[in-house]
Image (cartoon, rainbow, N blue to C red; front, side, top):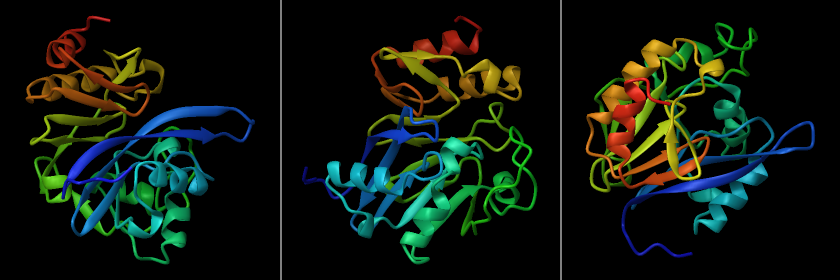
Length: 227
């Protein structure tokens, strides 16, 4: 697949290979421009080849990858980050919310696991409302609840939202965040209300895939507690 646009955004489906032999389908995201290729989230540990193959199917290569943005600290989002950094021989810039840096640095245990992550260096701390140049423009939206530092990413020109785990989806319909994996559910719903205020036509959910249509109305329902 060749991309004629100088910049853009697309979902990156990955079939993660789990230690028990099963697979888990997730949707990371890619943003590109003339001088960058950005991956959002990295799957569980051991997925370097899966990510490499996914990039190639999308019309890119691992050699082109310049940045990784981490939405939050859960192991199915940060697991393969150390491998990517090693594969890129350090030529990979890592971005994460300022509150997530101590977790990624291995300074304090991951909230849901009680163990420390393999340490990585975060090159740039992100803040709510920050504008990034990736993919023709990207806005950082702090969406705490699932974890305290969780971020989503909004791409205004395509009206696309990368939700991370702030939202899930099933069969093309947006669903609430998974309650049993969400640290502060009321706060998570407040974050969905924040996302519902954005002009969104497409949502890339990490668990579930891509949703289109009346996604803003559905986000308002979820924020109001409608299942």
